[in-house]
Length: 230
View (cartoon, rainbow, N blue to C red):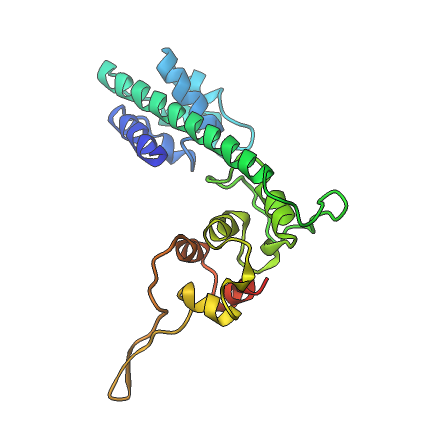
């Protein structure tokens, strides 16, 4: 739903001839939201909008001001106002959901004490926070619950591990071997062969949330087979 409200706001910008997306990569970033809220509050001067520029932006104030010389029709401002209100409401609901997830994770038994055995440095570093990352330290919670830092597996991040563990649990003996787990995740080859000719290659299609998390992570089969044997 958040993406839909973002698209509605972008559409309102287009109708108002405000080319905000030409001067910034993320309209819902710090600068974009400052300008958006100023428009909703009644501000219309492009040079004033340019002063809301975050210091990390590459676009100069004059460039931003020129991109925001548009048409402030009341019907488009009304649409923008409603889209912003819905966007804010969705963000509040997501924050409430994050709080509940953190509370439930806190009730899980600990296999390791992060204070006594700190997490190793992350294998990947993001210059900016991930869009769907929760508002709490999910990686530490997963490390405490599992007793091992699964993010050390190449391509694995907390946002991938969390849905997988919520789907399969912590009992590694559900499957006799890691190969059985890999088969359940759909990591086994499923080549289509006819008359000795390979018609198509790929993995076996499966339908579960753990498999979807695997697909979103973009990891290869070897990484996930290693995670099955954690």
